[in-house]
Image (cartoon, rainbow, N blue to C red; front, side, top):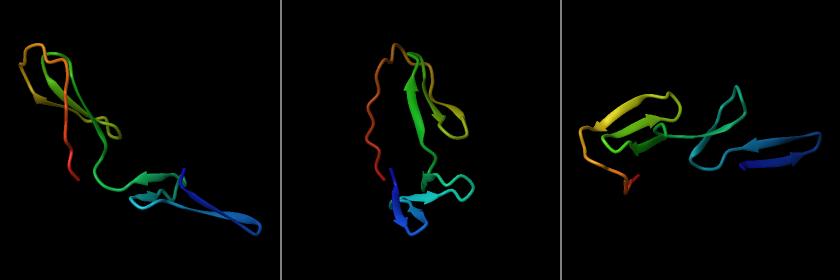
Length: 74
């Protein structure tokens, strides 16, 4: 879902603003910090990186935490 332009005998693809083309794969990837997922297992609030799979406990020893809300600023 990025930008591809038909040319005579081929095509040229570019990435939207905020993305950069990986020259090895031709895939547009977001520029900036690694995306992550923040979640709870009722006792802890944890974070896992979606690229490197780094797993971190952010807050420990909670009681029955079942939902999270976040306001992430750029």
